[in-house]
Image (cartoon, rainbow, N blue to C red; front, side):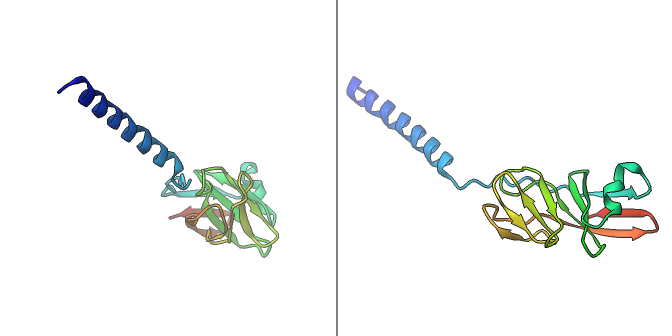
Length: 137
């Protein structure tokens, strides 16, 4: 192998590396965090969980956002937006979730209603027994 062939191979290899790097960074952003499997209980008598005593209130626990809708039902979805992992907030008007980082919106069951997120939030089951709210899924 002479110098010209060697430099040609080196140049081709570097070009392939740079091209691969460029293509990787140009991929559509969707850093969807993996939604946790959970099973926990919230004591609604505890001051820590007092936000859930009012319709429209919400709190974060164990990677989940738990909310009480305007009609008094409990709903829970994964707290991390599926676009880039920012915490979503509960919007009582419409009983929906929103990511304030990039504007993604989700229905009460976690379904994407407005991008840039393109995958749904994981929905969890809420079961109220007395003053204990079990969240699992």
